[in-house]
Length: 350
Image 1 (cartoon, rainbow, N blue to C red):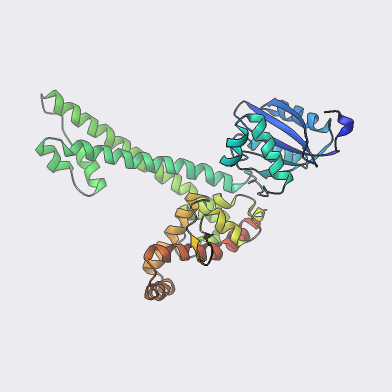
Image 2 (image 1 turned 90 degrees about the vertical axis):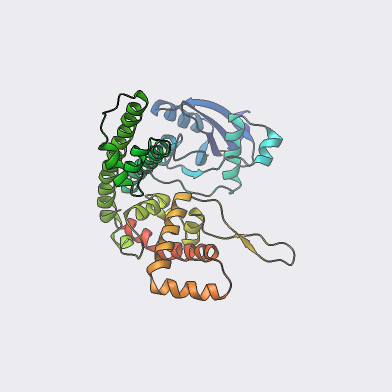
């Protein structure tokens, strides 16, 4: 397209990848101006921005994966005073009609911003909450590996010789690990020797992961205490739950305009599913599932121990609500309660 025939105001759309980003410029009447590919590094970002300026003024951009492959470009564009929006991948209906390619995805990103369909502001990834995210990611991996280790030990003990099974197959995980470590290699049977050596190896792994978790939890507690002391004072909110909710909100929670946005982010806002004369809502299966689990943990603790919540449960049970339905209601109320506290705590850090 001739540069003299296009509008000066442009919208940038980018399909992000590990090594290369594909960018598309769209003018304010929806015409594709140009398509180009750039490398994923500071030089590539500068080239992309110069390329944009050669066609006009870019004030807004839509990026896929602003928290992963597009994080570097997102930060660079924000430094250039370009408003960046988080874009979800194109829906399946559009993809079936138009096919799948990087330029097509980049164009869809630009059009969704131009049509104001994509309005989500990306997380900033530049503060204490990002440090918490590192710890949360590592902790999840440690917990999963630790669970796998004890499950593997129990699976081996199910078919182990009687004297080994009686000594080690006990309900307590710690006692099971201790018993496995205490086994002695006094058999000439290669099968039994191999079994004992693997049980001891897995027991050592379990203990190493337990120590790893203690280290992570200690650091996580220190960070949450410094960043969200008020949040930690709320009933049922511990360090891990607080960190998970803060990670969902991001270092710039002001991007969430109101508490309903935070509830939708956590997947606890009911979705309208009405049709005709039937008015109903359905379960929201979207959002950040880790944050949803964190709110479920708070709801469960309060249902067991908090007098006010137990009275609410009794009331809703008398109305015929099931425990799951009551938990869903509680998660929505808890999100409403915690959102202003999260925003207040994080605003003190800036």
